[in-house]
Length: 304
Image (cartoon, rainbow, N blue to C red):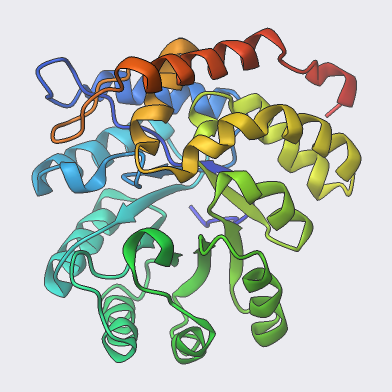
């Protein structure tokens, strides 16, 4: 299906059993529940989906399962995180055969590519999969490579590169992208705790981690912001912010999956070397989620 690059796209979690095998049925349930709660698209195998903790064949199996449950109800985007160019090409071509609607592509992993290497990486992927829409995942804070404005200028010639997940944490970048490129690229917010600010500055979508636990509230924030009802969006956002902060710390995957579990939406089980949260950190996250549940805003008053 054609991707409408707008709205809330949760980076959904990958569900594991206690023996650390992938639970495809549980992952499908997570995805189905998100769609039923009104999200606009699904990101599989992003950071929260523990992409880099999966074997290549597991990634393909998960995409097949995701495609089956999504059933063209919303766009399905595949996170792409590979360490060599040929592996990324193989993965994206397989995703296209499966019927994935787009790929969210990180710069090559582990090795921090130079500017010219970064441009060549994305250009090569675009040329190898010309029918696959590409979203650039720009997260220099976590991964050390900034796909900056000058690099985006060079990549603008690639027609299939259509969007960017902006995760620099600098909201000025959103304005700079629009000033430089007008509407050439669709811009998504990629950092939960500046999501509303990003939407107010013109981002047309939000790729979110905490939406895994609180999808209805995330969708409400987006809808209110897109209607210019910022004061009302801010009411929900202020309630949500303590949880959204969890998306910005090194244990974000464990925190988000624990929040899912407390909300009855999934399991906290992660794959090694990650470990589930323990002790004080675990207690703090549970307390945050329980407080959020206890003070949950009444969304019906917004008539969305």
